[in-house]
Amino acid sequence: MGLYASMMNIVENKIAPIAAKIGGQRHIIAIRDGFISAMPFLIIGSIMLIVANPPFDADTQSSFGQWWLHFAKNNWDIITMPYFMTMGLMGVFVSLGTAYSLAKSYKLDGLTAAMLSLTAFLLAAAPQIQNKMSMDFLGGEGVFTAIICALWSVELIHLLKKYNITIKMPEQVPPAIARSFELLYPVIGIMITVYPISLFLQSQYGLLLPAAIMQLFQPLVALGDTLPAILIALLIANLLWFAGIHGDNIVTGLLNPIFMANLATNAALMSKGMDTTQILTAPYWSFYICVGGSGSTLVLAFLYLRSRSIHLRTIGKLSVIPAIFNINEPLIFGSPVVMNPLLFFPLIIVPMINATLAYFALHLNLVQKMIAMAPWTTPAPIGAMISAAWDYRAFILVVVLMVIDTVIWYPFFKAYEKQLVDQEIDTTPATANV
Image 1: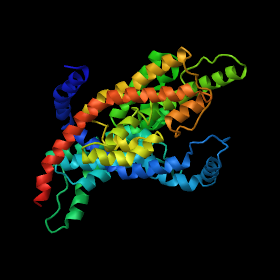
Image 2 (image 1 turned 90 degrees about the vertical axis):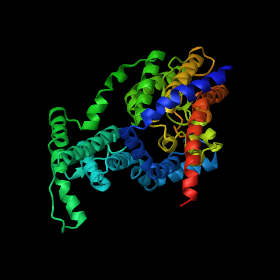
Image 3 (image 1 turned 60 degrees about the vertical axis):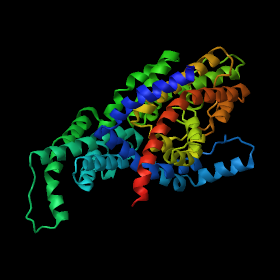
Image 4 (image 1 turned 135 degrees about the horizontal axis):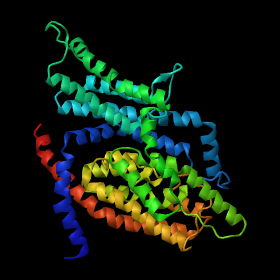
């Protein structure tokens, strides 16, 4: 039996059954549904983000590039407003969708559960201060808090319902009014649990709950320009991504000081005619490690385009253009890769292999180290070449990494495709008989 056949056998017969059992857990399904419900908003946000961030340097000689840059700069607020109201509010959508799904699994009222979840999330992530409500943690950085609030809100309703702790209204009362009174005790429960924690963190540490969670990752700031440090950061980022949290935003947000310092060092050395020394920079992360977005999923988007699964083929059509510009939320949440145990291994391993191969290519001076900051929405091969002072070898390195990424992603993609195709075949007769 060949290596590929052996790998496919392990994935289909060992990993897939375990993944199916884990994937059937109600809380995991609820979280997954929460992200899927946010898909239409993420797609629109992705498109507007591409428009607002042209893949051109400010000094470009391209007339089209200059026009696009000028247009984006002069209309920034107009272009980005849909982005901030969609992807910028991802935590809100996830909170609502997760709570609704989990409530339905308990046969509870989904609307009231979603409303309670949103209340808890806003208390924790965006309390009003001086008549203003901050949006800092309503997007990707607040998703972890949104999930916790959603799960706790529904479990609170379920617990009170289980022990019949509720306000009973006469049968003559309209159902909508009765439901609103049934929610009164859960609201009080949120007020005496989530709100005091939020107030305590603000008064004692000057932090909101999402910021307190981010503080846990402060040790990442001390990471140096070493391969083990990079791999640890990647592991944390993609474990968070698997849990539905924008791990890249969290980790790179803490690593940005290192990114900028290393890039400045390389630029200064090159200006003096000296060899560059630093590897860990923002372009290295964006164009070598995350080809097409976190998890290096550009090749997965292309694989989806020819999938036998209607679902994956549809996601491929919707996500391939954003993925070319390194925006992969439509694919991550639409597949979904989030909370999908079958796709866990490649999500973790592919970026780490990319990081390792690119690290040694740069360390051995086979490819020029990064000295410039190309826009992160630049397609990876071009962005890498621009950032490496137009070194064509950077372009080649990205292409090689994409080939390797395809080899690793492919068997897991095929196993997931088979799973979905079987489901689609099972549902076809039922649909035809309706």
